[in-house]
Image (cartoon, rainbow, N blue to C red; front, side, top):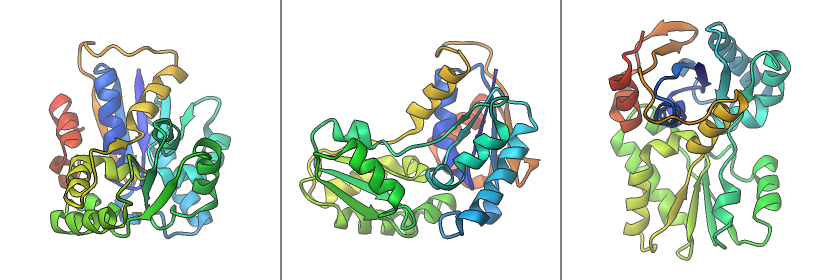
Length: 261
C-alpha cells in the first residue's frame, strides 16, 4: 500500500504523520514545490497549474491514493486534480474541521490564511456546518510562511497576533491551514496567554488520513510491521526531507520511521 500527499510545502507533514500512525506499514510519497510556496496569493489558474505539476510527480510513483494536504489547493484545484487523476487514483481533499468544531456549540474561531479568510468557500462551509454557532474568522498573515521556514520568532509573532484577535469567549479554534497543525501546542499556549480558557483545537490531518484509507478499502493497523518507506519529491525531484521539516515532531517521526530516499 502506498499513500501520496501533496502541498506547496511542509504543511503536508501533519497528514503524513497521521497516515504513518494509522498504518506504519504504508509506503509514503510526499510531493511539494517549496519554490512556489505560498500558493494562497496566486491566481486560481496559476495555483491549479502548480498543483497539477506536484500531483503528477506524486502520481508517477504509482500510489494507491493521493491526499491534497492543503486547504488552498483543495479550494481551487481539487476539481482539476480529480478530473485528471480519478478514477485510477483516488484524490482526497482537505476541508477545515468546521463541522466537528461547531458540534460543541461554539463560539468558534477559524484561523486561516488571508486568502482563505472570508472567501466564498469558507463562508459556504460556515453556513453549511456552523449556521447556528457564532463564528469569528481570524486571518493569520505570515504564519504559514513562518512555519514553512521554521522561523520561531516569526511563528511566535504571527501566533500572538492571531491569538489577540481571537474572541475571549471562543471555545474551539479551527486550524484552517495544514501548516498550523505543526505548531498546535504553541497556538494553544498563546491562547492561554491571551486569557482564553482551555480551547479545543481542530485540525484535519487525522480525518483526511482515515478517509484515504477508507477510499482504498484499508483499515487502520497501528502496530503493523514492517515500517513503510518514505519518498520525498521537491519540484518533482527525489530529495531528502527539508531541514525545516525536522524542526517539527511530525517530520522527526517520518525521518525516524523510514529515512527519506
